Image: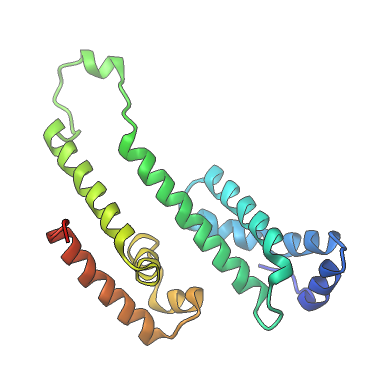
Length: 188
C-alpha cells in the first residue's frame, strides 16, 4: 500500500532541483510498483529490475509530468510498459536459447519434451506471431498484449492506456481480426 504523500508538493520541489523529493516518491510507491512487476513477470529478480527501471524512467521524465495526472497511475503505466518490454525480451531470448543436458542426451528413456519437428513448428509459430504483432498498429498491439499476454481485465487496460472501455473492446477486437489475417496471409 502506498503512503499518503503530497505528490504536487514533491513534484514542485523536484522541479526546483530538490532530488530528495524524488526519493520520497520512490519510498512511497516502491512496494506497489514492485508488487505489480512481480505479478506481471512472476520472477523476483526480473521484478526487481523492472521496478528499478520504472523509477529510472520516471526520474528521467518527471520534469515533463503533468500535475493533473495521478502519480501512481503514471508510475503504473511506466511499470506496465517496462514489464511488457521485459516479457518481450524474455520471449525472444527463449526462442533462440537451447539447453543441452549431457545426462539427458545419454539416457534413452522416453521424454515428455516435444519432438524436434514439433519444437520447430512451435518456434516457427511463435516467430510468425511475433512478426504479426510487430506489424499491428501500436495502439492495437498495446491493447492485445495487455489482454492476452498480461492478462489484464478490460477495465485495467482502459485505466492503463487512458481510454474508454468501449475503445478497449474495439481495439482488442480489431487486433484479433488483424492478427488472424496476418497469420493466415503473412505476405500481406
